[in-house]
Image (cartoon, rainbow, N blue to C red):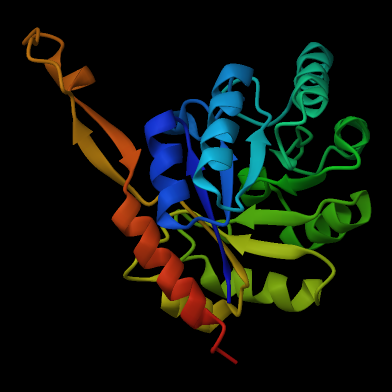
Length: 251
């Protein structure tokens, strides 16, 4: 059976993902900009819901202090280090998700090593910063040597479906030394085909749908900006989980 990770940025989405059967949650703020570091209060609330559900769900916290590129200053590195320590001391999470690049598109080994040391002994996923690195196969080896547990990637394309050829090659090159997890644009309609092509064993999705605001009042001048938001849909998570269970049959 393949493993299903769902990214969430709200309590509503987290509860839907837990009840839908997600194996792991990537906890973020602001998924609309690709995900930022979540608050400790949010993570604590999600952990409480996991416990009350009686389910076994891993929680990984995104460590990303701002949107935009993945070239971080020394000041930002301090913030990221302190965020990791806060989460680790809280004993609320099972791992972290982050990625740092140099200005020339290489993995920032020095700064990654510092954050990995703070995260130890918890496991870490190198996130989709990988999708804008300059030399993916070289960077794969670097990420492995640094000690990351997995790479989240769309195969350097807009979606994992389009990036499946590169994802397949990365999985073959990794040869079990690291988990290569397809993510971005994974749906009920394409998950099985992506699994068949890539032979991946873990998948990352949002399983989300647009939800209209419950407010009965609206300002016509501002309505378009605030009337809808994306939330995780429990039925979509269930369907993805069922497909993941069948993925174990793929040779």
